[in-house]
Amino acid sequence: MFVHWTYLQTPLGTLKIAGNGIALSEIGFEEMTLSKKEFQVPDYIAFAQEQIEEYFDFNRKEFQLHLDLSFGTSFQQEVWNYILAIPYGKTVSYSKIADDLGDRKMIRAVGQAVGANKLALVVPCHRVVSAEGEMTGFAWGIDRKRRLLEIEKADLYGLQDTLF
Image (cartoon, rainbow, N blue to C red; front, side):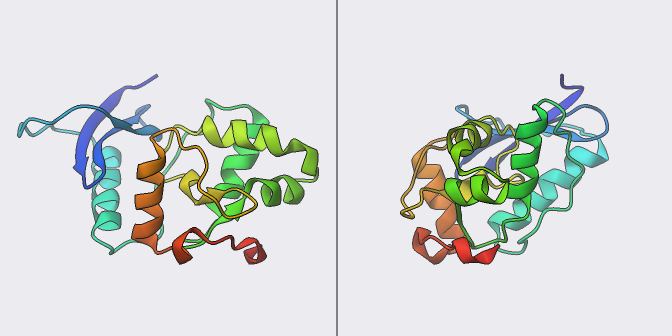
């Protein structure tokens, strides 16, 4: 549930940034255009806006935001916390995540958890690729995923499982 929200225009479209009064609970692309109207937002939302703008200006590689991941199951939260540790400009495969979490057979569950992420950019699910290093699903569109990886120059999407 959102208590506060605002919208931010980015090079990849409009982002909705929402929070529960304490932490961010959703960041996602919306198919809309923004008016020039300014919104008064609480500090934690304004801080997120500032960091996202810095990311798109190539001045931020890590987000330092308070996140609410309670909307997910314990397994989803485990996957999201793993994804939070993937460094800027690097990629990891779904199978590597499953292996590292203890069971390669969990690869589909990992994929579902990645797809359930509601915190675009900040929980960088765009950094998760197939075992072959290929572009795979992204809740906000493959083109946006490709462009995010290009922003980060993620070795042009090459698989980098050896990071962890």
